[in-house]
Image (cartoon, rainbow, N blue to C red; front, top):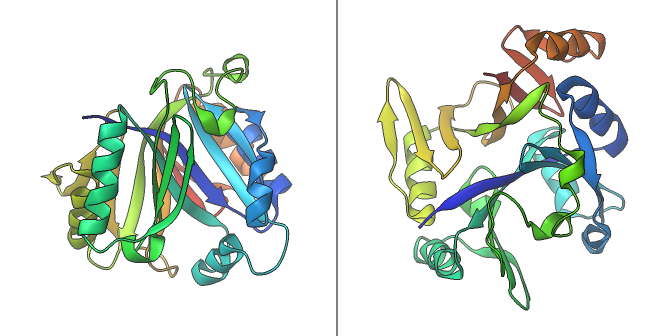
Length: 256
């Protein structure tokens, strides 16, 4: 059983300024626009981060789930942790784990061999957790949310290399970690003061709330190759926090 962190979704009031910040500062390229999110009253852009993806969505009408999330968390920020299962069996197990632990299914799509299951952020107390399975289950290649293939030519890794993990904040980090671990079917690890779950390629870290925004997806750990570029661009765009952190779309990007 393996679960890959394949995509992180951020939500923003305005799409284009955030995409410009992300691409300029992190040195990543847009690779796909999904017209399908229009049914949810959203527009989006996806960017390649190694073999994985960073998405930004923004509301284009009133009364959307994304818009409500923006109001609840007081502005732009983290929205979804999106994963890929190594098999339909793994995905089905995670879905059942969610139901067994009182976590509702927020949305499901089944199109042939592609199965998408989004778990409710209210029940998970921090963010959407999505798990997908398709005919390929190829962690290094085919990914339905970006149209399958064709995105590979947009990959750059000279500045930002890949995701290392995501940071979820809560009033009780251990309690939140235990819930997410039960759903994912993975153990909680406590080591050197950190609380986390190990996915196949990344770590979900659980921390105490350290801002005024309440529980949520507060940060991303990224492996970088050209820190100087990131810091210089972040200063130009008023996103600099420290030599180890930049703030984009209300999200802390930790430079590792």
